[in-house]
Image 1 (tube, rainbow, N blue to C red):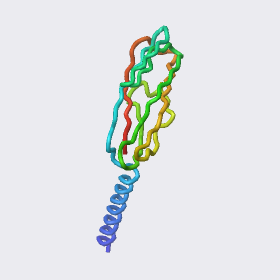
Image 2: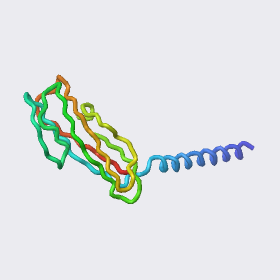
Image 3: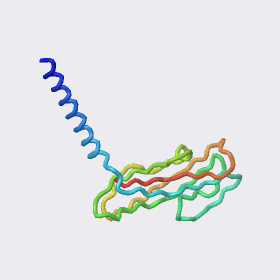
Image 4: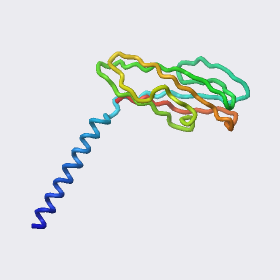
Length: 136
């Protein structure tokens, strides 16, 4: 009798694990594309603007300064995507986004504003980071 109950529990546990994996795949789809953009910031004793569009460039900002940049995300696919935006390194603590998780319909665009707040104790110098746009 004990062997039958033990086998039954193993089957039930295996079924629960399998259903959990399937649910996770449906809820958190595997990324179909990941776009990356470089982020550049120079902390200095003056404010300077950079209009480069090949990266997210905040220019030169003084400690306690603030700047914003817009990026446009376009879904060129024929289906809706779940978009997630992540920042990889140290600047993630300095940058806020107007939105970092949303659905983007086919052929839809969304403008996201990135705002950087340079802390007062930031050292002068160049800072770089990576912005990842994940299409799921």
